[in-house]
Image (cartoon, rainbow, N blue to C red; front, side, top):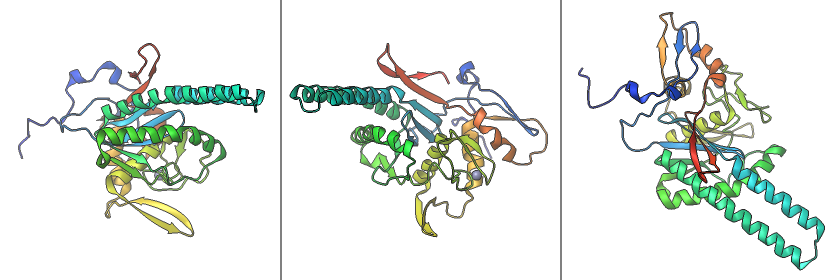
Length: 305
Ligand SMILES: [Zn+2]
């Protein structure tokens, strides 16, 4: 077998900046050194699946790893507008002037939010060639706090999805059933029934500890990549990726794990498995790409992670 030199198997050293190096994870068998780099050898941008929440959009693909867009500024626009409108409503519920003021606040909120939606769509487009998005008509089961979060982020998400459809074409925007994407382990499929808004997903089946939004984005990515089936077990819905007999856990360990960690260095000790490693993931894994609103540039810029 010949090595194809036109293809790059490893990142060149100059492509790894010091900002691209993460904290090493030391396990008895290996030292995992997170290295963040772009592999553009295959050309074409990857398909990325996105999980949306009030404060962030979290994307995942094996090519990009974890991508986070901080949407807290957009959320604060809605929250501030909600507070303003509420105070006017209370002061004068029957006056014409109050009605005018209310509609002014609503218009201003729409305009400001619209600007952010365009910018967020631009960032998504710069990262990926096609997208997997949660299908909004299929509601998740909500906790009460999540319902409020959802209600104000829903219209933003719908607008962003529309902008992306216009720009990428409908074929490149795939809607995915989001059911259970936060509450099932993306590695082994174990169902976490009392997640209750925790930031960290802890799996009772395979010991995976992972950021909750990242876990959801990986689940959505699997639905995007493999397709999925919807089954009912004891009256409960269950969405499963169509892995065609392949092991989900093996796919996770061979494809997802390296994409989160970047690279690893063998220490020479015998490898027992990846189970020890996944316990350390939550503390070790940071988004590879992070974008947030910058007030001076009035745009969403890449931030160091
Ligand atoms: Zn698991």
